[in-house]
Image 1 (cartoon, rainbow, N blue to C red):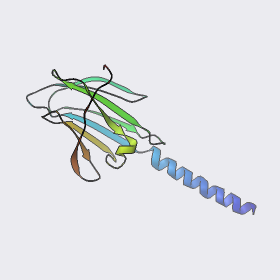
Image 2: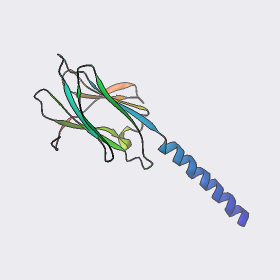
Image 3: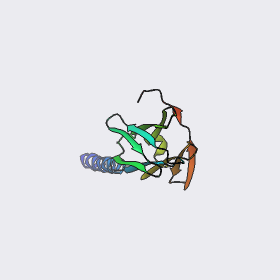
Image 4: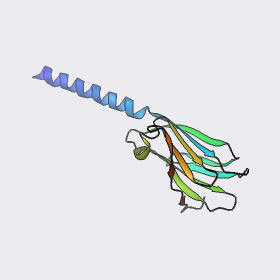
Length: 140
């Protein structure tokens, strides 16, 4: 009986280690591109609970990028506020582990299009999809 408990404990321990390794070592690369027309600059401020990536000014055709590991509980969230010329500030979630686990397996690409719309690339399905830009509720 004791040998069976020990064997089951080892199997359970191995399963937990495997789950831990597969979930906590997932690295994601996020890229946000300015594709606005006519050389319009775009201000970007991205952050999470733990990290503030500071304000950045993107020229047309340039991007801001960063890497991180998804946490064990898959609650990782990076959110951004963007603004260009005389527009209002707009908000979107650049990485939400629950929403983006399949869509952004390793590369989470976003672009603000020439019209000022937000598009995210879906790695799983292989195409760009429009996402809403919401008015920012914080004064960035």
